[in-house]
Length: 179
Image (cartoon, rainbow, N blue to C red; front, side, top):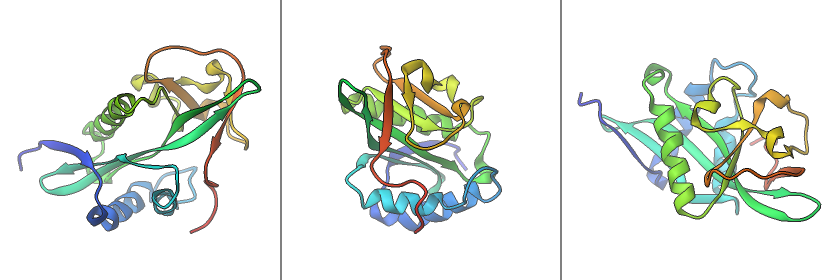
């Protein structure tokens, strides 16, 4: 085992391994419907999907982590802006606490910035995501068109600017729909 983690774009040949990985990663998680793997399948088929921002982490030839950034719109009274949603980030349970999720998130942010995207929104743990530059989304004036605890909604700018005003982030597909 050489312990070198390789981050690369997902390919069609990776889909089943990613499905299984996400299933395992979220199996024992609280506050989830345990259907994130189906969300990824739907997102891949949607116009929100950006292949370059669907990344896998490979360790010793095995896919051990995954992250996906997809297009969303942030809409205010004044304008509509394209942004990204981060969901999901997943690491095999036996490979967690090794920094793999962080490497995936960091690489995804860098790639998104390189593609010209300036912001990312996510739902997630309030204690984990600030280390990657995320702030409570209310600081950007962002809300969602559905109920979610404010402490779970985060946003960041990949270009490090801050914006003011009020806006709503709109996912391009329903996140809570079934398969």
